[in-house]
Amino acid sequence: MNSIEGILNRNLTASLLLIFVGFWWVSIMTIHQITEDYLITRLAHDSVSIEKHLRAHTQQSVYPQIDYTSLNPIYDEKHSGHYFVIEYKNKIIESNSLANFSLFLKVSPHLISHYETKGPAEDNLFVYRYKTEYRSAPLVIYIAEDNSPVKQALIHFDILIGGFALLALFLVYWQQRYILRKGFKQLEPIHDALKKLHTGEAVQLEVSDYPIEVAELIDNLNQALQSASRQLQRSRQSNANLAHSLKTPLNLIYQLLNDPAFKDYPALKETLKQQAERIHARVESELKRARLAAHAHSVQPFDFRTHLPDLIETLQQLYPQKRFHIPSFQNKTPPPLAIEKEDGFELLGNLLDNATKFSHENVYLSIHQQLNPDNNAETITYIDIEDDGEGVPSEQLDRIQNRGHRLDESISGHGIGLSIVKQIAEAYEFEISFGHSQYGGLCVRLKLIQSAKIN
Image 1 (cartoon, rainbow, N blue to C red):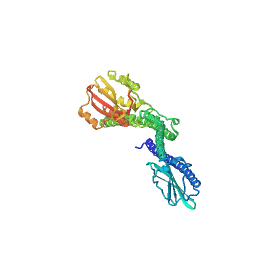
Image 2: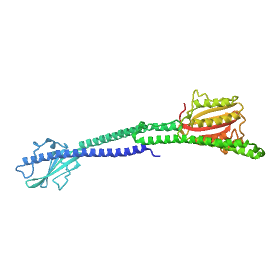
Image 3: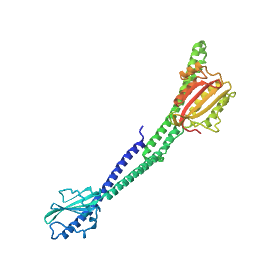
Image 4: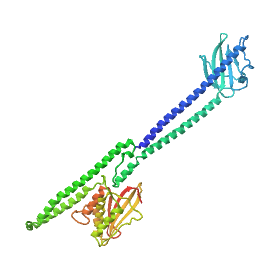
């Protein structure tokens, strides 16, 4: 799965790298060019000075003459780093600073040129070549300067500007990454809202709480939630209308079964009665199943602390001789079930009702939670409902599990109740299993996975 943040970070890194590499290259090329132009300008001035010196001190001589007493003394000092060579009519005049070192003289067709070569002290020389005329003969002046300090300074500058560019690249990258994460953090309320929706809480997102880029998404999500809520209400209303419309025909059938005309047809009467009861049981089962809305907008989730005592109180009134053992929830309270309140009452009510019917005296409900080993962001909740009755034989238990608990729905006890339980569990993607209780009766275990929240 592609990450928007990862894609933006990669593209941003590539763009910044390209920009800063270009900035670094332009910076060093510019400073190198400025330095070279400065050297050329300075050496050009030196060449003009030497040419004027030659013309001033060579009045009677055929060849140019150098008077070091009136020339810059740096050219008279051995290996001073400043040198010159004069080439005139196949004669070479070298500065004393060269100390008989043969400077490489590069021939060029241009009047002015420059190049680099090795100096007498294994240093690097920058040579400026200037061609002119002296007494109608070509005169070439080579002015050289040791530019090793300049090149070393340029290397330091290149490293410095490169380090600065790299540091700026990382700073801009982390700044942009922080801004991106801060921007995506504004979307976290959507995740929280969807988690609340999953647990059955009513949710309506405020468009003003989110960036304008996702405003349309939030608006569409709100419309989808409203549509789901309306669909749920219409479904329940339709179910109520269906139940009401079927009540009259069923009552009429029961009245006809009590008619004296059926005395002479006991077998027919019994068959019609059985079929009417089957229809009644099937209608009740299908109406409850149709009412389920596990994936639609729920109004209120089933809360153990609030709703479980109400359920136990109702069962206690129906079975005053039985004892119910449930957690006190004083220290730990599991999060609300990711199921609508009415469906929670239906699910646990059927299981507790069956356990109560088949128990001798005691019914037990326990809740256990643990972190999901496959995903630490989730918890696994186990709900065990047990009784101290005779239990279910192993072969019957296996048959119930293999057939998905779908026994004859006209039989009371572990029949239609467990069928409804199975339907609710499937609708909400709970896992349900049956086993032998440690108290002697049946143990029904519900397993559900929710977002991590252990109080």
